[in-house]
Image (cartoon, rainbow, N blue to C red; front, top):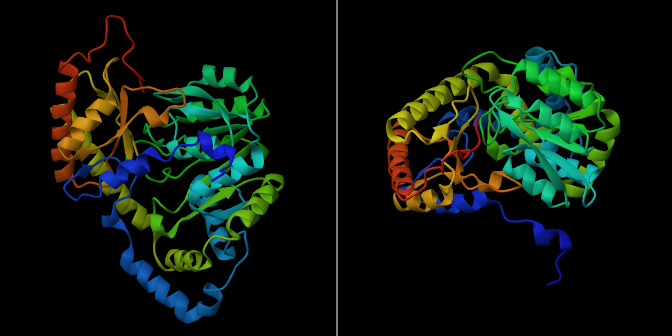
Length: 405
């Protein structure tokens, strides 16, 4: 078959391929970016679905407007005001089929082949894949303990990338978070550039330690920023409902691109979600998730301290779903992965999260495992790390052992 040229340089999702391996229930998986199914509001969603079909069945099963269900967009607008103090009118909110579609739509309306996109390093694999499909030329700015390296950000912005894609709160894959000062300074740098910030905030409400900080969008003129969100981490990923906010000129282009993609996000799913939000306390539901994820994060951090070799460094995030590990230079995380699968434990090697490659890092998900499975899985993984590192994986004298977040 004669495929398009763009498909030649885009690989299938590494994580999705790993998840096929982890379908075996005997495997303890820290690989997927999966919310805990133990905390899906299944019964409340069932009631909402029944009510929607009983009260508005014909409308819920019909085609709908591209922009999305108006009451749901109003809900998001009100929540931005109540939670972060952001004035984002409903007409500047487009409902998307998961936040992943927001990435696809932004790439379609902003990028020509060879256009520059600035990414965090490490960066979200789904964004790398989405932008690669449209021929993006990538540059990167490192993440540190307080967020993006501002000196590198300033330098890269001089190269005039069209988009700077960032996940400032509990980033996937690293778990890193920009502090308030870094957000303000990053906004100042962006204000003086012609680069659009594409801010992804799927984990922002999943903080279980420290102080809440608003999105970078709070410090930045709306013309310079598109802000994405998702109900996947706080309600249900299976509904596939996210959103993107943008100023009117950009929103017009995004709506046009979505019309060409799928006409509109499922009207039935949008109405069910909105009924759920109307009839349930979302903040109380999020509080339950925060507590559970905080306990699982603490369990993983403590298990790592007991079972991992000292040379394996890991982050200790204040929220979200992931922590990040770096190994001494010369230690191949894919070799560790191969051994781990033999012991029926899975994680994600770091290479797919870099546009310029690295082999001594890895991502762990703590949200989708019970404390008992976390303890056992980390114990098995620790054994694999010790075996691989004992065969010559320690860093040469003076070598930088990897990303230091």
